Image 1 (cartoon, helix red, strand yellow):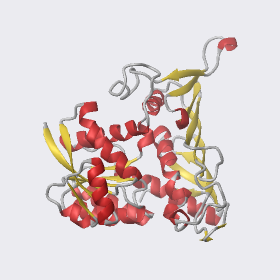
Image 2 (cartoon, helix red, strand yellow; image 1 turned 180 degrees about the vertical axis):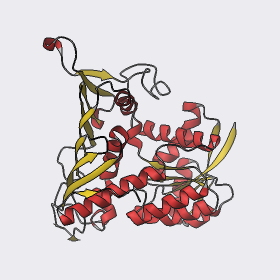
Image 3 (cartoon, one colour; image 1 turned 45 degrees about the vertical axis):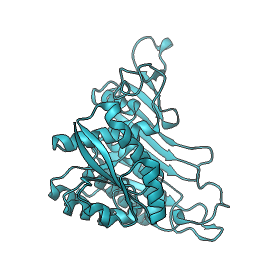
Length: 367
């Protein structure tokens, strides 16, 4: 088993998740590449050294450039704020390092475009972190849709709603500062990615974006709290997407409904180990949504648990991502979702802002 040196930029919420994932992935999936946690980077030397000890890295730094140039680091995991993604990714590709970047790809469509061009030119493995699309349930739902188990798609409704900023008395902090940290930059990319993964490319959007709590203790809110948009997919399917960080009671409201000509599917991330399937067949009196519990017969479930209904969790999604990334590096092959998929999401986010400003339908540019 060959080892590969991993460097993680950011040691907080997502940095920890990736460190845990790379410590576990070889045992869970018996990957051909065995990750070696080489270096962690944080904003201060003190915090970096803390993460080094806590997660088991060989070294620590407060300068991401030192991490990227470290010859022992062969793959870079970017888990730092969006505004830092472009500069780090470009330097990593220049240093001949494979790159995994957390969503969104960059702080703007321009960033995402530049990063994707560099990634494509590099010939290296590049991946963007849309972890929720990798639950066993959603992986299986994508298969059902591709197999036309519910017929041709006619309607998709998706939302990503949370309540971490619902209290108007919460102070203005970094979350209130810029477009990239608003709901369209933070939550929307996950559900847009789901819509693309399930229904295919989006042709046009019409969006409305608003700030609910314009003033908070300590300052003005400079970005959006919630947004919704109508979408039309290339395959003709209609859709509606809603995003909010002020939805009281929603903790991980990543959920969607799909309607086809022969049935329907419902999924809610807050209950991620099941989904609901309706097939328009048989006696009308006994038709209804059937609750399907995920188990060993569903994608990537068996590696974590041998019993149906016992369930997988958030951290397992990150381990699955790590497996896919390592397998692509080992094989030297592309994987999904890569930077071009992150760019597709950024194009839709940008189009939504344009639509909200012009109050009109906006076509999605593919250039």
